[in-house]
Amino acid sequence: MIIPLKKNKTDTYNKQTNKMILQLEPLFTIDELSNQIGINKYTLYKKIRENKFPKGVKINGRRKWKIEEIENYYKELGIQVEIK
Image 1 (cartoon, one colour):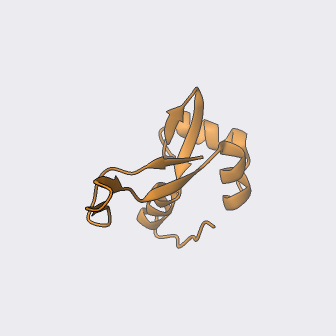
Image 2 (cartoon, one colour):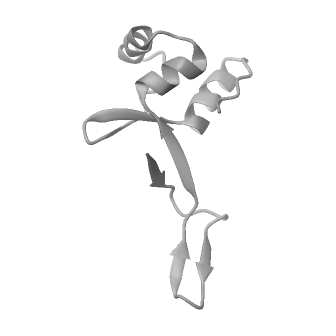
């Protein structure tokens, strides 16, 4: 699932169609995130409850994470990760 980001410098305005063009960012589910970083989803939920991991956003009752949010979290811990 992808959602539009807030307006930023990379968003552009198409004068011919009179519409804003938004940059989109993919979101990961708990299962996708678990597979990407190699941590069990139940461990991730435990860390979220303990405020030791980003909470992500809830969309239609399901929690999703931005790749940038996870990469920034690990960067603050001094760990370099690349999520694809």
